[in-house]
Length: 88
Length: 128
Picture (cartoon, each protein chain N blue to C red):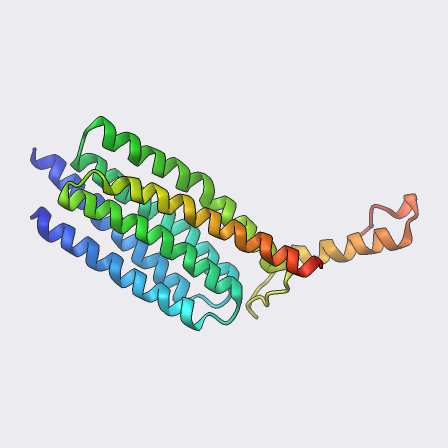
C-alpha cells in the first residue's frame, strides 16, 4: 500500500511543479515569477522529502535543507536588486 | 505497525494535495497578492504535512532533527519572504485585482505625503 502512496504523492507534487512552471512562463510581472519560483523551491523540498520517505535514503535530507536555504536567499536577493534599481 | 503506516500515507497524501492546491492557486488567482497568499500559506502547510509523514516513516534521531530544522526554517522564512515580495510589489505599483475592496497602503501614503508637504506640527496628524 505504501508504495502506491509514495508514487501518488510524487505524481501530485510533479503536477504541482508543472503548474507552477506554467505560471513562471506566463507571469505578466516580475513578482509573479518570483512568487512562482518560491513555490517551485518549496515543492522541490517537498518532493525530496517524499522520496526520502519512499526510498529510505537519509542523505537526501541535506539537499532539502540546502534548497530551502537557497530559495530564501533568492527571494531576498530579488528584493534587494529591485529596490536598488528603483532608488538609483 | 499498521496505524503508523496509515498515518504516514494520510500525511503524505495530504501534503502532496496541499502542494497541488497551492500551485493551482498560483495559476488561477487574479492578481499578484492573492497568488502570493495561496503560495505561502498552502505550501507551508503542505510541506509541514510531508515532513510529518516522513518523520513517522523513518523515526530516527538524525532524520527527525533534519526534518525539524527544515520545518523551522521554512516556517520562519515563508512569511518573511512573502512580506518582502509584497512590499516590493506595492512599491513598484503592481496592479490590484479590480474587485479589491480596500487598499490601505494608498490612503496611508496620501496622508503621509500631505503631512510632509505642509510641515506644520498642528496638522501632522491628518484628520478624517
